[in-house]
Image (cartoon, rainbow, N blue to C red):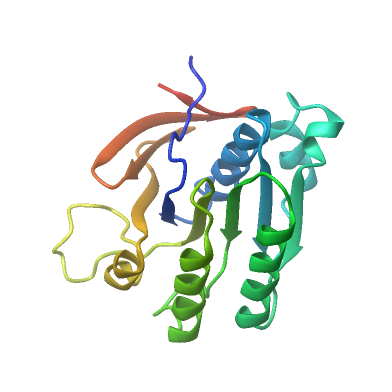
Length: 197
């Protein structure tokens, strides 16, 4: 099986996920790919990635390559967190990916200040860097969507320049479907990352 590749250089993506479907693992997989391709990754989240999962997904990288993964905590004030991310993005060389994982409350409406700060981050994003936001999606209560999971605040995020993506469990086991915009990929989650089915 071939390893999944994003191929979204310079894009801003808002990934909505089902709970426990592997959203953080997908973000780590993409971060490892960015580093393997010579880039640098800024990772911001409320908690650092699980150490075991991190080592599995970064096993194919050398220690020197892995040192281009820069993790920071965004617990607390979103405005300060975004300011720190922008400062790191502007001071570190060759940043090719910024991941903001678990950046908002896991249910309900996304706070307007959080949306404003993500719009600011999108505006400051470098042309060569991919910006990936990962958050819990929700079920469409209106019944208007054919998707199992929808991104919260999708209209606002699209106005800010984000492409909407979803990651869902399509059947029991390690099988997932990743939809980015109108394109869909069937994937299998394995210890080393995501592979095409």
